[in-house]
Image (cartoon, rainbow, N blue to C red; front, side):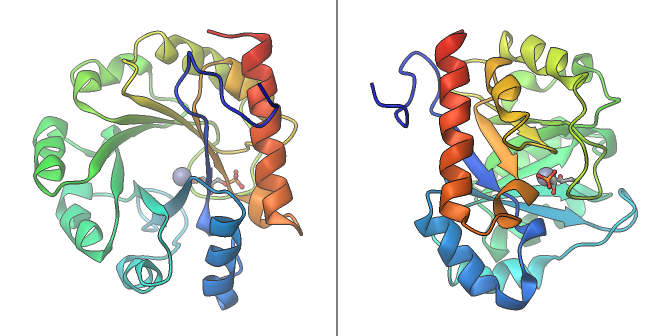
Length: 233
Ligand code: DX5
Ligand code: ZN
């Protein structure tokens, strides 16, 4: 098995560059570069200035980039009232919607409505939110996003304490459910993240901040696969 191939007993490893760290003045080129460079998903960080203390981009941007990218749009809603806006994000071109349970008073209802819209459904947990808060919905979702920084900004340091949470969650998911880690994933942290059981790795700064995005994606993938091989689940 070559160093860039996957580990057959585990879910396929996926690298999800976060658009938040891209150069917004040249979005079309940025998207083309990561698509050609081996990105598996495009992570879209939506921030409303209320749920998190930052504002990023929204529905019109997604609509426009949908026309120039074939990547899976992994849409991370860091917004209050996700149920109010979810449908508009789906119509704009999201392939998956991840919402924060902390702001979804009726998560099962939201999951059902997302299912009826035909998108993959994810839930995200802030660093301070315990895994137990997912008990009622865990079986219903396609993906769990574990925040390994406080949501709101790219380029923050990885919270090492979150590795135990990732490990614990990895033992509770079915093979068809994805475990995504979000925040501070880079060449120094990626091996620990992969060993802990994450299969979908969001990487903003470490991909878009690199001069050669293809090389950055390939290196993250190589380091993650090496770590899996050293400690297969
Ligand atoms: C933080 C976002 C992350 C972040 C990742 O609120 O959810 O997706 O942009 O960026 P890096 O990889 O730079 O930590
Ligand atoms: Zn995110």
